[in-house]
Image: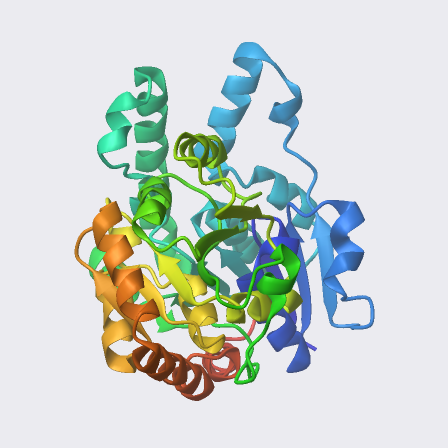
Length: 409
């Protein structure tokens, strides 16, 4: 039985892509061990106890986190320089000798490459992002204190160095959008990476849902705008809040995943400034099994990426596919990948400007045209059923693994 070791710095409990990949490979007969930042107490919540092929390992926090002052700074810098911040994963995985080592994102690649070399095993690099590019900030970067800007610049250059040095060691590279695949191939002179989209497992949501209406006590005539995912800068969340006074009073806004991210206080202050407390709801993220039901109970989904870097412009975020599978028409920024999906499927519309007026107009154009809204819903459901589902993407993952060289003894 092939043993696959996966490394990821995120909390596995909330990383649906990593869980789907691990579960798919285990179902195909592999033994998969995932080392992540999950809390030991949360491991049972994965529901993996019944599967002999799935094991989650909690990496201990890095030792430098317990230090203070210059010792903490020096320890962190050393971890970033050598391991991309993934040194604790290397320590936790050292006794998990495997036939394949799978690095989820650049911050695990140095540790994964070291283990793959040690065990003479093939290395798979799963680039969830254009990791180096996502660290390029937009106009707001000027407001960041200069010491932090210097640290960020140094970190970005270091990650570029690590990726340039290590990506060629991978027997296979996977990524999440065609534009990112093309960029990685061009930038590093490698074969075009295999495309495995961040799509959910297929669920037939044709019947719709009343989840949010019941949970929030909303009347049948009220309409729900949904912003799903982490609350972060550069996602035009303030402009979305500012669009609310331009929409009919029966329209409400729901943030689903408000406990994730770093920008909550700015959003709360804007809601209070505009007196929108009765029309804006801030809900924590839901378990994966409940997410589509909640999404399907909204009327319009929003995807608002500022596009200050190539990672944003080339992104295919999870919520895009979740909106379509839930039959939820979406409004999105017109970047290459998202824009292409909106136009080819007919499941969403794009906006050229991210002003409150432009966002309100796009939402209104959907809500005030029931026949158009219904057609977009039907188009999204069809696209999810045909192409944008995990069952389709899983075949690409399994084919990639079947073509890997075997570990050398």
